[in-house]
Image 1 (cartoon, rainbow, N blue to C red):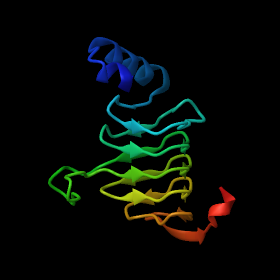
Image 2: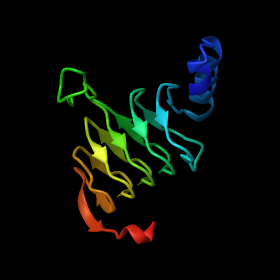
Image 3: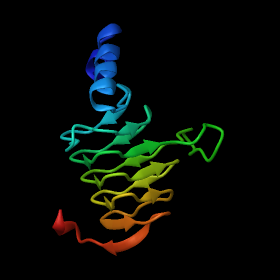
Length: 142
């Protein structure tokens, strides 16, 4: 969809997005920057991602995950972004919510139903409401 949007084909990306929205209850705007080999193991069922989010390579995002932002006037980063960025090889399990101008580091794991409101260090496991670090991983465990 992103390729079609960048190629200035206006109608087709919107039709595909609407089909995905109806068929899978998934909101994945074509402006989302998806890295290579991003996987939605349950067909993106119930996933909602803000249009300005950047997702790194080889990530897995399970069902009912929300990745969103605050209004632009609240807690924005220097470049004006108010949405999360997700590093490479991150796994986000079912029902997790990530909001605000945060970064989830490479190789991190977000447990099911976690509420992530702060920066997540690379190669850590976070969980809870609000999310906190549960353990550290070595980068060899990827």
